[in-house]
Amino acid sequence: MFKLRELFHRIGLLQFFVLSIIIIVLFYNKNDSFLIVTYIYLLFLAFSVIKNKNTSLLANNTSILLLLFIFLYGLFNSLIEIIIDKSISEGTYFATLAYGLAINGLTVGIITKRIKNEYRKSYLNNLNCDKQSNIYVTFLISVLIVLILYKTIFFYKLGILFSFNNNGVENRLEMFDSLSQVDVVVGLLIIGIFNYFVYYHKKISKLIVVTTSLLLIYYIIMQLSVGNRRDFVPIILGVFWVFVNLKNINFGLSSFIIVITIIFGFNYLGTLRANTGVKISFNENVTNTLLNNEFVYPFFTTKYEIEEYRRNVYIYNFNYGGTYIVNSITIFIPRSIFPSKPESLANQTLKKMFGNNTTIGLAYSPVTEAFINFGFIGCYGVFVLIGRFLIKLQNNKNQILNFIFFTLVIDFCRGEMATFLYTFIFISLFFLLHRLRLK
Image (cartoon, rainbow, N blue to C red; front, top):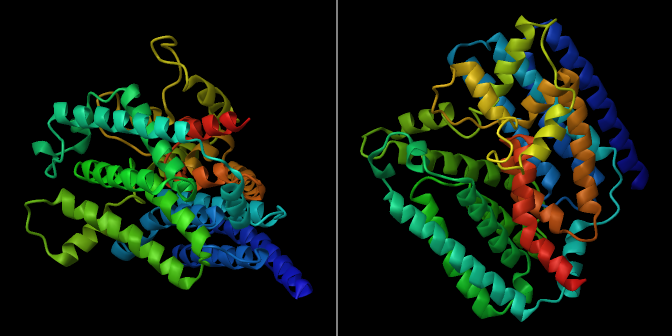
C-alpha cells in the first residue's frame, strides 16, 4: 500500500512538472479553451495528490481551502469572458496564467513537505493538556462585552445600527467614512476573543458558552445588517474547523459541493441586499451574482499589473521582496508618527488606475503581490514557500496558529501580506496571552 501511494505521489509530481511546461507554452500560444481546461485540471489534480499524501484528508484542511479560494479568484473573470464574449481578453488570459502558476507552486510546496503529525490529534491533545483559568475566561468575556458595546455605540452614532437598507446611501463604504484604525483593531480583537472561546469551548463552562453564543448571534446580526461579512466570517470558519475535528469529517466531493454552494449563497445574499426595493427576477439576480461577487474584483489588481508589465517590459520596476519586508514593518507604525510610510498596495494601485479622487475600495491579491515583487516566477516560487509553511503549521503540536490561519484564509486571498500579518497578530493576541499565562 505504501509503495502504491509513493507511486501516485511521484506520478502527481511528474504531472505538475508537465503542467508547468504547458503553462509556459500557453504564455506563447494563446488558447482560451485549453487554458480553462488546464486551469480546472490543476485544481482536481491538486486535490488528488494532497488526498493521496494524507492518511485522512479532513474537510478543514487549510491547504485545501486555500487552493480552492485561489482557484476561484483566478477562474471567474476568464469564465465570464469566455461565456459572454466567446473569448478571453489578453489581460485576463495572462492574469489567469499567473493564478495557474500560483496553484501549481502552492501544491508542489504542500506535497514536497513531509507530514509529521495529524493536526486533528494534535488539537484534541491541546484540549486535554491546556488548563483554563476562570479568572482569565472572566476577563475575556468582560473585554468582549465592552468591545461589542463599543461597536454598538459606534454603529448607533452613525445611524446604521440594524440598518438593513444601507441607511439610504448607495455605496456601503460611505457609511464608514469615519472608521478609524482603533475601530479596525476593536473588530479584530472581537474576532480573536470569539475564536478563543470557539477553540477552547470544551474546556469552558456551559454558562460562558451560552453567553458567548448569544453575543455572537447579536454581533452577526448587527454586522450582517450593514453587509459586513468580513467581521464574522472568520468566527464561522473557526466553528467549522473545530466541528470537523471533533466529528472527524473527511473532505470529499460532497464537501466540495457544500463549500461552493455556501460561497454562492453568501454572494447571492449580497446581490439581494444590493437590490433591496428593486424588482429583479431570480435569473437576473443569479447573473448579477456571477458578474459581481467576491471573486471578481481582487483579480483586477493582477490583471492591471500584468498589463503594465507587458506594456513596459524593460522598465517595469519589480520590488524584489520589498513589500513583504518594508510594508510588514511600517504597517504597525501610526502614520501620525511616520507620515511618509508606504501606502497600502491596494491604495497605490487604485491611484494608478483612477487617480487621487477615487472613493472605490479595492481588495488586493497575494498573487499580485508575488508578481510585483518577482514577476511570473514569483507567482510560482512564493506559493511554493506558502505551501511548505502551511504543512509546517499543520505539523506543529500546538494547533493554534493553524486554526487562526484557517479562519483567515479569505483575508489572505484578498489582501497583501503586511495587512494579513497585522490582522493575524491582533487576532492571535488573546491566544498569546493564554500561552504566556501557562508559562
